[in-house]
Structure formats: structure tokens, C-alpha cells
Amino acid sequence: MVSSDAKEVFILGLTANGKTFRPSDWAERLAGVMSQFCPGGKLPGSHLRYSPWCIPTTMNGVKCVVVHRDLRDYDVMAWDFVMNFAKDNELQVTEACLIPDPPRK
Image 1 (cartoon, rainbow, N blue to C red):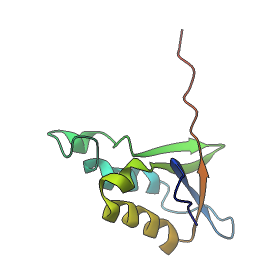
Image 2: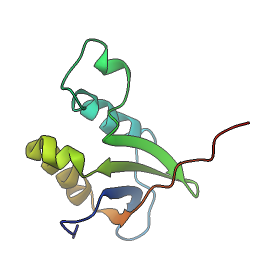
Image 3: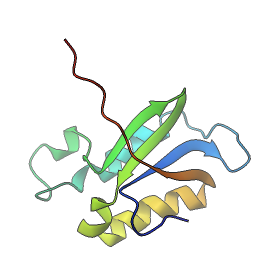
């Protein structure tokens, strides 16, 4: 369950029983579908980049998608789609705060 005040939700590429979710590019596919949902709405070329509200990444060797609450505020059906994807595939979901990488020198 995701609390109403969570700013970021992590959908992990691990099922409830700890198995790695397949296909291996699931995070990129999910984020690609969500690319049209971004601040300012759909823009030309938006299909060529990920939405800042739905970002694929890898943490500790596990593929995941970071979903920002602003997506829910922008389009509740898009939020429900992502959360239902996780639920339907029995993926682990956790709340957290993504800490940005330090600037490169």
C-alpha cells in the first residue's frame, strides 16, 4: 500500500516471492509508455525521453522504476495504470526518497 504523502514510489523488478521480473527491459518499456505524461503535457519529441515522473533505473543490481507523486496529481488514471501494473505482476513497491547523484567534477 502506498501512503498518500509519499513523494516517490519505487516499483522493484522483484516479485513478491523475490524472483527477478522478466522481461529484462520491463522498466524501460513501462517508462516509455509513460513518457507522454510530463509537466506541460505532451510535447513534440516527448516519446524520445522519459517523463521526470516515471524514471527507469537500477538500484543494487535490481531494475526499478521511480514514480513521482506528481504523476498522480497530473493524471490519476496514469498513476493507477502504473500502480496496477505493479500489483498485477506482484512486484514489490516501496516508498522512498531518491537522492540525486553528486555533481561530476
